[in-house]
Length: 333
Image 1 (cartoon, helix red, strand yellow):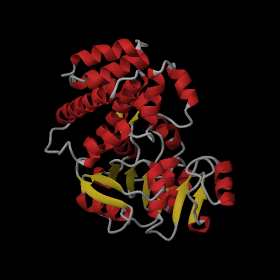
Image 2 (tube, one colour):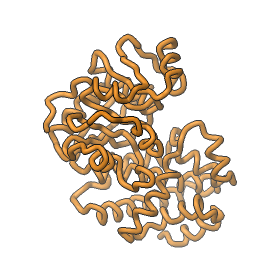
Image 3 (tube, one colour):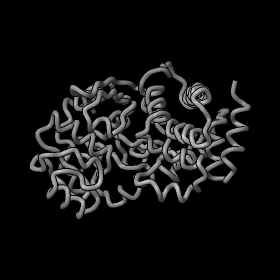
Image 4 (spheres, one colour):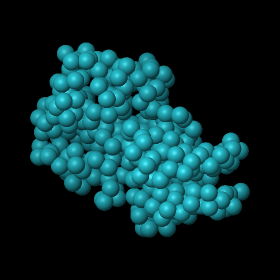
C-alpha cells in the first residue's frame, strides 16, 4: 500500500527522542496523538505544558495533542504510528496491543534490536504484527534529541522498501532545522544504528581508561570497517558507508557528550561496575543490550568483529577493561 499522506500521526513513547520528534511533527500537523504509558506523566504534561521527565525546556501547546495511556485507542485513532521507545521495552509496551496495524504506516525511530527475538524492530513489526514490509519505515542518522530541541541542524534518513512511503515520512519530518533523505536500505540503517551504540561504549571505555585522541581516531576507523563488514555480510548491496545514516551516526555517538552510550562506557572505563553505571545514569544506554544481541546475531554470520567482542567481554564476561582494550589495541594497525 502506498500512502499519499501520513494522515493522523501518533507518537508512541514518552522519552527524549519521542519528545523531540513530536516537536518536529507539529511543524506540519495541526494535531497529533501521543501514547505515553503513565497517566501521571500525562497529567503533569498537560498541567506544565512540557514533558515532566525529558527535555523539560521544550514547551508544547497541549491543546494540539490528544494524550492517552491506552495504546489501542491511539492506534485506532491514527494512520501513521511513530514508535520511539527504548528497544529493551518494545515487547512490554506492545503487550496490550490488540488493534491491527496492517493498514497503518509504521515508523520506527528505535535504535536497537528486540531482545530475546534478536531481530530488528522493523522485522518484529512485520513478523509479529503482520505489517506489510512496504509499510514499515525507519529513521536513522545523527540526531541527538537535545540538539533537535535546540533547533540545531539535523540530518535524518528515512529507510523504507517503498520509496513513495519513504518520501511521505521524509516530508513529515522535514523542516528548517531538519534535512531529510530517503533510502531503501532499511535493515542496513537499523543494524548500523545498533552497532554505533556498541562502538560508542567502546569509545567511552577508552576515554575512561585515558586513551588519547590518536587512539580514538584509530578506534573509529576500525569501527567503520567492522560495521561495513557486518552489513555487507548480512545484506550485500551497494551502500555508501560514508553516508550520514552510517558514518555520521557513528561519529556523533562515539564523540558527543550527549551520547548516553559513550557516557556509560566512560564510567565502565573509570572502574564502575555495569550495575552501578546503569544506576547512576538517568536514561538507558541501549548499546548495553545491543552488544549482547549483536554478539548472538553474529553467531549466524561469523563476521570478524573484534570491537564488538571486546565490549561484550567487558560487559558480560567481566574481563578487565584495561586488559581487554590492550588486547584490542594490539590488533589495530
